[in-house]
Length: 143
Image (cartoon, helix red, strand yellow):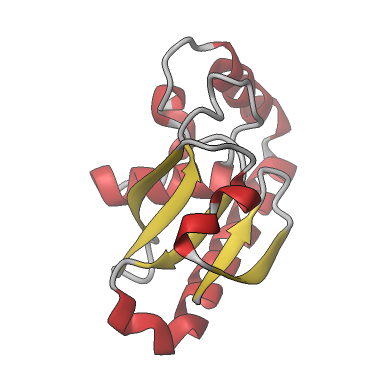
C-alpha cells in the first residue's frame, strides 16, 4: 500500500491508502499521469499523480498542484502565470521514492501550507483567480 495526500481542485484534502495501480479510482479517469512537484519552503521533490485527460474533459483546475508543478519546473510558485501547464482534477501527492514513505507527515505539512497559501490568494484576489481558471478551462492544450 502507498500513502498519498489527495487534494481536490476545491482545496478539500485527505490522506488515502491505495495501491498504485488503483490510483485512478481517486483521480476520476483511466489515463494516469504523473509529474514532479516541489513546494517553495521545502525544496524536496515529490510526485503528483493525476488524470492526464482531466483537462480535455474540462475538469476544474487544481491550483495547489499547478503551484507545485510550476515551483518544480521554474523555481517560481506563481501558478497564475502559466495556465497552459496547469493540472486539472484531483491530485494525489506521494513521495517521489518509495523508501521515503516513512516521513509522510512532511508531505502533509508542505501541502497543507500550499493549500492555505492558495486559499488566501483566492480570497484576496478572486478576480485574478477567476481569470486564470477561465484560461485553463478554455485552452485546448492538455497539460
